[in-house]
Length: 414
RNA sequence: GCGACCGUAGCUCAGUUGGUUAGAGCAUCGGUUUGUGGUACCGAGGGUCGCGGGUUCAAGUCCCGUCGGUCGCCCCA
Image 1 (spheres, rainbow, N blue to C red):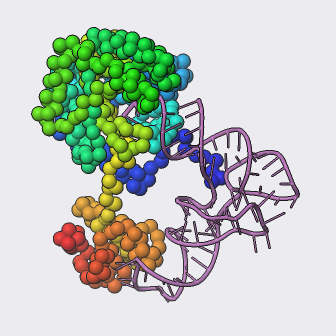
Image 2: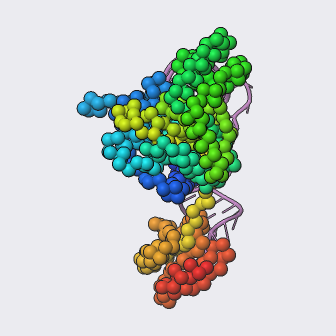
């Protein structure tokens, strides 16, 4: 390829099946989102850098090395959104959406992270996002997770994913557990893998899902969150699991599941799959009761999740190719004019049809066939004189004459 | 940020131990059929072998760099 122009690394151009897969995912999301009463929300694709830096945690990978940050002409530091939650939380505050609490919103779109691209991972990627703001009740967690589960079922990937569920407890729980974990791992620092030793300094909770074999015994003997749960936190988690059972959502307790971003509390969950190579999470989220407060707002409990559209698009079965009802095959200029009118009428009647811009009859018939059209509507001088089109069933080869003004009903009846 | 593999027509690929005019299938266009597709046959167009440098009488083939892709690590949707 001697092309000088090329797509930026980690971005993608989609045509045909790839694009259909993408929009199949979005369409399913939009359908299920209505069933659960989540209203559509739109937020900017970029925010002041501090919106993300502060909420996600300064030391997280996303903030410390993956953000697309730039200075605008006014000298302000802006960042392309690496996720949706922070921006939606900011909007909740700056737009006064507190008056609508509890607020259930959904959105989808592009997000940006500077990472090495690989299977199911891109620099510009796309997420579905659902949030419930201003609700501290476990019922919100249950409804949100059930929404995610139904979406996955709707997409036909329900049996390819498993819901991993955990609780990080309230701040008191989390702090106590974290302290105990650090003490435990510190005791075995020398036996830990190199990766985990750096985690110990940066993000000790992450050691829990280490893939290094030499870490396994140390991780297995590590203190579990259950031992540190306050009675309130334990009750809350019990209510969430009971609700999920009630809603018929299958889940697996995953005591080592920890989420990477700093703002999570209580419920943490991930729908995981084995089918995406190194990327196992397709839809993940949790409760972030402290986030809005940390942005300077009132204490506002909230839960949410995000799902990778590309990842789901890889998982679903290929969408059926979009066939059309008819292809117009005009012979000559006079027929082309008449066919233009007929095509417009058919389309207004709700029938999908195509007419090639150029080509002789053979060419147009070939295109009609390639388009997957059920019928070819052939119009030449003879047909114009008689006021009837030759309508050919492209599957059976049968052909019959039909008056111009009766084509729509003939196609629909067939 | 780290590692492995890869980079030849629009697409998928072949190209022998380095050796003349770099091939195939599909796609495109034209013809066999100047009003009948899906099958068949004939033909045509299309390539600075990602880019740059080096070794050599000679590089698509070997070496280095660079860009890009794929997969993995880290982390995440």
